Length: 183
Image (cartoon, rainbow, N blue to C red; front, side):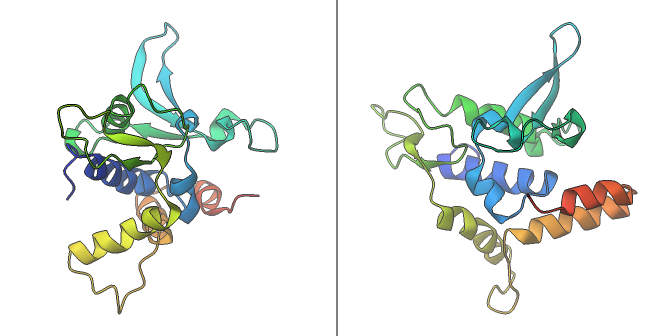
């Protein structure tokens, strides 16, 4: 649905796939920081193709560290590389450029990104919360859902993810962890 070869398209594609995979709540996507993601390696330091997502990585998150089992994982999708969240995350990190100093994951696209003397795909400023919040509604509208009749929010992906996981046999305790609100 989105052209990952454009700044806005890459962010939207990654956001939609990851918000479903990680069952993000509304504000989790907006406030996501790059240090929440960490590449997973085997015992010999070789990359496994997974990325751990754990918002506790933030130095400002209170409450101490959590067990590794509380982390969520993005696993490479070998069946459909175009939808692989790990590949998209790596591409997003490559396109950030050297001038980016903010640790926020989603950034304001540089409107001049395609010009020869451009300073990169993104500006050194996070994309606004209202913009991220509108991504679901605009995507739903783009695929033909009447967003005036059906309420579409960032929580919609969370509900969809939980329903899908339940149908695939994920245990009740795991589903409770996913649904549990932040303290």
